[in-house]
Length: 307
Ligand code: BDR
Ligand code: CA
Image (cartoon, rainbow, N blue to C red):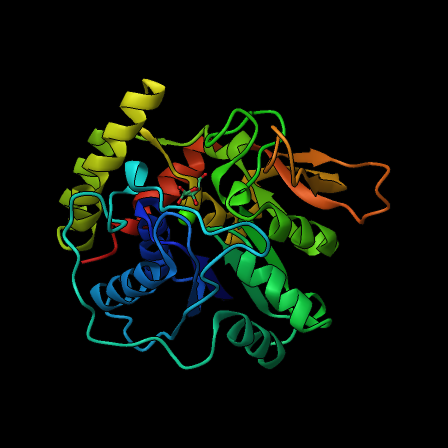
């Protein structure tokens, strides 16, 4: 059983990833921490609570995270990709529950200590909370089992700019801090997530198998699929965030390269993740290939277990 905290900016594919985690018998979800990105941190926190309540996991704590990047000014949310409220055309709703009093970085630090050597942290938004946890506690990386990140791109190019993947772009300085953490870090970036596409027919199947939660994902998917069609001409959307959660428990479906990495923090290429062999940094694991059909089949199979 993998003890997991997902650091998230829900977000349509974040919702897919969180519902996947809710359905996965090999995952013990210890909490969600929230971050700006697809939406503001405030909306991300509200959406995280909503998703947990929908999945009958209201007891899982949510800790609200940083409201802005480490050094850059706050970004406007990605409304054109995820809608103004993060879930496409689904209207905003107020959850019954509240976030815990602890902030995201303190929550992560405490949980890493309490579950020393066992906690997997899966950031699927910008990396500010993780960088803050590393800066507040020098033992944080030592205490976690691994940090499996949806972010970056080595050979695939960017998705928010020609060079940068969105999660890294939204806080490049934080991402660069996290790149110093060495072998516990795995990047599940566009080199693999662009290979895993979910079509409108897949969402119809998801909703047929799981009318309540799968149906909610299908409702959200219309907006996301329209974006992919308009911007990339694709008849499907990438399973970015679910791929990272699946990599936490099924690394055998991913092929990685061990590379020292850095993040470009200025200029035209800001947010690009590049190999830095002369940096003296310890290598991280960069996913370069994925058994895409297997990962997608696992995603669909587990979502079908939900109500
Ligand atoms: C990442 O950016 C966000 O839009 C998605 O939720 C995902 O985490 C993909 O680049
Ligand atoms: Ca995300």
